[in-house]
Length: 399
Ligand code: HMG
Image (cartoon, rainbow, N blue to C red; front, side, top):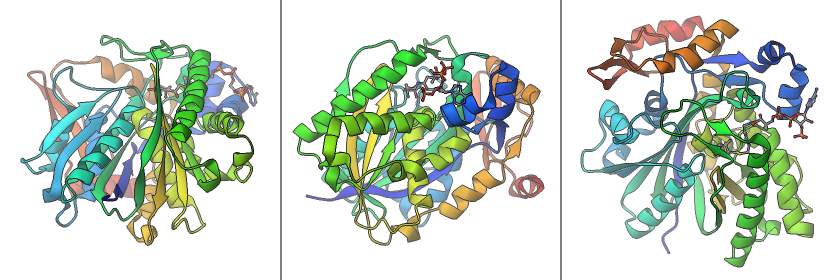
């Protein structure tokens, strides 16, 4: 069988963050609740001239080297925070980045899970047509009601992955375990910017889905836990990984004895600084694991659990390919996070809650530190543009 998997991975998150310590004070709670109890330090805040498309374009751009641009046969854009009821967000990315016109483009939705559906379908596609490459993008802004319990888990970011035959980063194993059922733990009707959520129920459903998906994975001849070296869970907030590990250990019993909190620690590093990115969270976690793990992971297996409220859970595994370190973009990812600037509460509220409400025609002032931006709305058409590089250079130099 043709081996399929992830050949390249790139992440993007806005150039500004709001510290959770300050949010805790505003909410009148002990900062340790957010920093230790929830496990989050900062939330990434998009500027008014950023959205899921501009974030996605910024994640994809570094991947378009050499012949890759021409080889992409399919673009799958996964998101919970779609910007159009009809047109795929992927087409805006296709346009602003000038991708190959002989390529299919589609948007996938199922809360935080959809990128995994994209990865699995992309893998099957390249197993059938090994010369083709599939660009899988996940991009989201996680938004809850102001002053709600969910506010401390907000964030924004995107991940872009090239799925190819004979991948140079990760081989995706064909077995996977899935579990779906209809439940109202988190949902967002079309007229809403912020999600409705039953937080406690969502945690229970996530853990039940993990257990059921794991059991299904075992029934379908997935790897035993004894053959898995690292773990990466969908991460709405980093404490959730600890809860997920507890549920997996309970389901797997003695098979889990060789694993402890260190087996997923590196997968939490980026998420703790960015916050929830819904469909992108699991893969930003995977990127964090690969970028930040000092051990050589060559030949080692990673177990991944993807969860999307509503709900779908999937457990699958990948193995790390020899030479993977040469393909990583660790330096760029760390630099992206290191040069972010802190904003105050008033700016956070204005950008996160006020600016999204305006759907009138407008030209957006230049505020992003990214290379691509959401520049305007003209006659109800969203316009995206590449930023003048000289201007961008001076903005990032100030940071
Ligand atoms: P809450 O009720 O305010 O928090 O909301 P809590 O009272 O449960 O406390 C949280 C933790 O902080 C607890 O630890 C406390 O003990 C601890 P735990 O028992 O969980 O280990 N704590 C402290 N620790 C240290 N010092 C202190 C202190 N005080 C308390 N002083 C909740 C928490 C997660 C429910 C809320 O933030 C929320 O609703 N978040 C949004 C929903 C969510 O993220 N759900 C996760 C599962 S569903 C999912 O992942 C899908 C999703 O990504 C969406 C999608 O699919 O698209 C959300």
